[in-house]
Length: 437
Image (cartoon, rainbow, N blue to C red; front, side, top):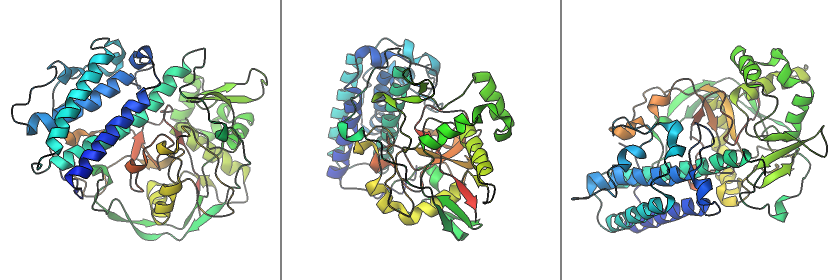
């Protein structure tokens, strides 16, 4: 592995380890043991499994190879909580994680404590070469699972007819300001550099930095809103094959999709919508970004939107290079002000009506792009089993950019490449439009 990590002092790395591991437990704290056990669909995992798998990572890749005489907490956990690392060995089937009732939650927590104690001892000593890189990778991996905990819990609670609340909605977030006007921010294009160029952590799929030529284009100032999406539905967007890729139209009909995931018709107003969130069932926020849409839906909306504006260049999804090049110049401010996990909203928020400029590049919703998830020119996966982290998924996936309201702030970068299949909707995924200049 060569993450080119700008190695922090051992104390700083130890403090970061404690903070990240504590944040994971805090996300699980509002849940009952039953809620930590259940798996609501094959793509989601039980919270107990997330707590265990992130612990498995440190035991497997850090402690076992680098602590002489290390003994595993339980040898059976090597298979039980392996996700997809074939280089490590066998794995328990993903779709059956919810059936693993033993070990119980208390045992998993005891395992976390035991591993954390051993990691504290290790991080207090001079580290062997490469270990700091592995620890940082483990922390970035755990931050990914923090977001997965929230999206998986949201899907789980949405299956309960009682519409339970993960955390109550703070009064300050109950308002519904008007939507910021959508503006088109022109970009000149040209030969630009894409990919991570820093000395800090980045995943192998963000490298190497390379040149790409971009034609002049424009990017929407904000993501598509819930109100705009409701207009798409009202105009028969899910019932009109003109807007859909062939595979997307097949998906809509087979799955009988008629709205974003977690949208429900209002009991008091059958013509209106409510949205189930981690804050429970809430009225639709017309000015907030739409989320829980798949790539098929994002692409169909862009075609529909283009038809509503026949005198303008057709709207479309941005390429990931267009998105990243635009975001690079705005990233420090976007990251500092973005609605990310630490903001505490746990749902997308409306863009501020600030007149002009790009908004919400960091946080709120992951933004689908038109780009398939493939290797950059010159890509080399990390050596060893951790090389399975990204590269082997570079097929039948599309790239998303920017992070969401459930993404930790220290985890996201302008060069970060998230990826999911075209029909995945349980993540906080939305869309920002682009068009040719």
